[in-house]
Image 1 (spheres, rainbow, N blue to C red):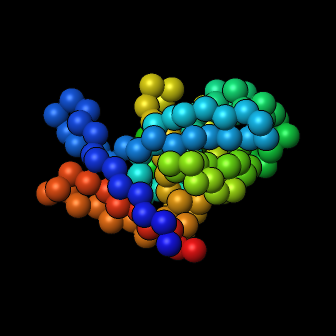
Image 2 (image 1 turned 180 degrees about the vertical axis):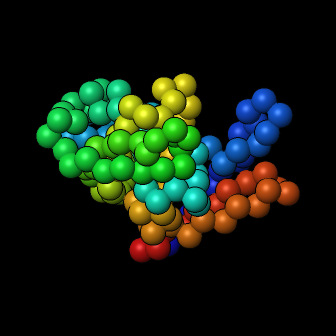
Length: 134
C-alpha cells in the first residue's frame, strides 16, 4: 500500500482539496491541478486538454452529465488515460468536456479515482491522505 499526503490549497477565502496530478497519453504528459470531488461520478477534464494529449474527441463515445452546468446537461467524451499521483500512474477512465470552465481545475471523481484510493479528508489539519487500494 502506498500513501500520499497533500495539503489543502487556499483559493480566495476557501480551502480546497486540490492536488497535482500528471495526465498522460502515450508519450505525452503534463502536470495539472485537480479537485478531489466525492460527489463527481467520474474524472472530468476540460476538452482542450484532450488535444494537448493528442486525443481526437470526435472518435470517442459521448456521455451526458449534470451538476456542473445549470441550464442543460454537459456533454463529454469518454476515454481512458494514465493519471499520475506523485509518479504512481493508473490507467483510468476520464471524460473530456468543453462544458466545464477552462479556468478551473480538473475533477477527480468516484470512477477512476475514489475506486483506486482510500481518501481521508482532514479539514482541521488541512490535509488529504491517499492510500492505494492495491
